[in-house]
Length: 442
Image (cartoon, rainbow, N blue to C red; front, side, top):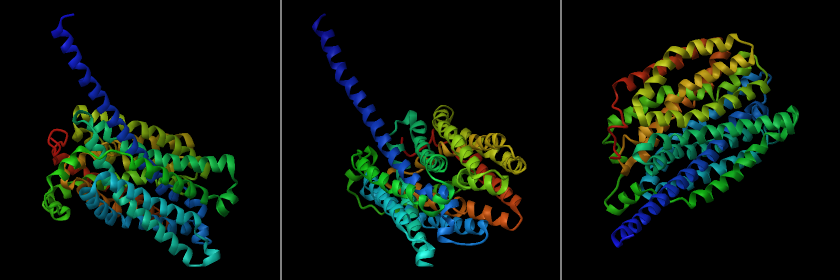
């Protein structure tokens, strides 16, 4: 081998090593951010998963639907404070870094779960019990409001441009995994560990204690994550930075986030969070059957997210969003109507799964689409605040509105409401640009 060829081959080695190191670091960062996201959503969703059992502990009533209505109202309150979390945490992430904001977010979630786990019941402290529950949920809502925008920003910034849709889809993989883990926890406790009376008496506290412990693990994982290059580049400029004022210079992008989110978030919370109660109260299945359907359908739904994210990297974001918009508008009412008319658990599973396949067109890429709309200096705030506002109005109220309309005897109105909101989002998808090709990253 001559000297020139030796020098050429030697020079190539550090390049390959650097590329491998960069890939390892990217995967590690995505894993760290995603696991923390999983823990946060697990902590948030165990409230909904176990509300059938602890409703009497905080809102005693002779009517079980009234009990569920009260717990659903508290669930909705957790969403109402999310815009404040999106605002505060978004600015903090854009000023102090994505890693610092994500660490603070998981800390607040830990505290909220611990408070719920240790809170005395209505029988012991009277009206203070639901007051403490509400305060804990507001704390968790504040945490989650900041989690979405910051984690969406972090995952999109550590991803490569060619695979941004695929990498960013893992936000919803872990979000769904958190929900799935909450439901599986319920399934294990229902079938293997405790009886129904034990779950209602004290067993519902177990998942909240586990959630608080997991959040501590999430905190230490996030403290070891690397900061994104996009934020470091912005911080290096050392220019005066007022995120809220800068965000208001992008009214079109803010409106796009609202329009993008409205139908998708309502459909998501209808077929995931509210569906478990819908299967019990409207379809007539048992609690165990509804839990099993939720677990199995959510598992498949979770696996679909990277598939749709990968497709968006190949064909663009807009066609994938259009799939959700068209199919969601046309199929929502028939699917929900068919669910109320079946008494077969397997058929109910197939109908729920069909809806989740449709919704994957939104959930898999909604985070990256929003991140691609804003510059790095206001990306976390731009994604988080308008998203949290929209989720509070449409997603957070889905369970309460669905339960309330059923109580009033007008359940089908809810089906048309969901379909109408998806149609509004479809109109946004039709006229928006494809952010894969025109974005603020490149």
